[in-house]
Structures are given as structure tokens and as C-alpha cells.
Length: 187
Image (tube, rainbow, N blue to C red):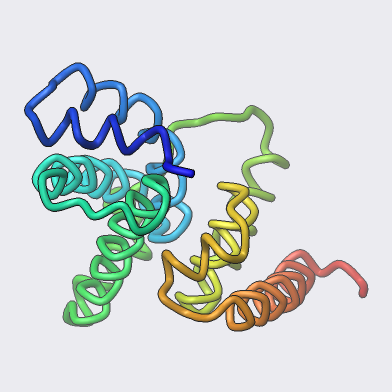
């Protein structure tokens, strides 16, 4: 059974701006959420999300319907986010310290919830997510935030389904440990 979104990609490949706008509306929020939670910087997530859709537009004529369109879009998002993290790791120590320690330079999401406790919990969770290995973080975000199946995640991350199961199990276990230790919650 063919993914109905293949027609959308074909229309984009033919230069249909309305089809492109429809695809962007459909995936913009899930993509920016995934990237933000993966890289931990809202402003970088905005930039990378724009880059995702630019690449979708450019690659539409070459798109081969091997998997669902959503998997293809998230694969592009994952690759760009992973490259962003690799780039950050190559930064010299001074710039890395500024971007992670100085709140004037650190990207942060707009306030989505009120209350100090909610912000504190969200910050704790984001910090813990940032300490997960990249592959575990990506697998967990795709499963929990995007609701993708293990098979879809395996396609996006280019690993086996068994690897996805293991990545998610280890990510959940490690996340629980990190949150408990930072919040000083007894086990």
C-alpha cells in the first residue's frame, strides 16, 4: 500500500508550492520539537527545521518511495541534528562554555508553562536528556514524542529493530537514574 503522502512529494517535485506548504504545516511542529529535544537549543532547532524543509524541497525530485514520507523527513531532521551536535563538540573550550553556561548566550524555548516547579522539572529533564548518548536520545524522542514504531525508528536511525528496543530500554533506565539523582528522589 502506497503512502498517500507520496503524491504530496511528487507535487513538490513538480514545483507545487501549495503541496510544499501543506507538508511544512504537517511536519513543522513535530520536527522542531524533535530537533529541540535532541540538540537542547530552541534557536538552533528553528534554524535546523528550516534546513530540513529546504532539503526536503531540494530532494523531492530524487525521492524514492522506499519508506514512509514521515520517516524520510525525520531521517533528514536526525542527520542535521546529529551533525549540529558533532559541530558543537568540535568547538573550542571557550565557545563551548559560553553556549552552555551563560544564560545570555544559551538558546531557550519560549515559556510554555507557568510555575517555577514546572520549569524546574522541564530543565531537569532536558539536562538529563542531554546527558544520554545521542543514539539513545534520538530513539527515545522518536518513540515517545513522535509515537513512531520500532520499525520506523530503525529505518530513520539505520539500525536493527532489536537495536532500537535496546536503545530505548537503556535510555529509559539511564534517564530515570539521572532524573532521580538530580532531583534527589529516593529510588
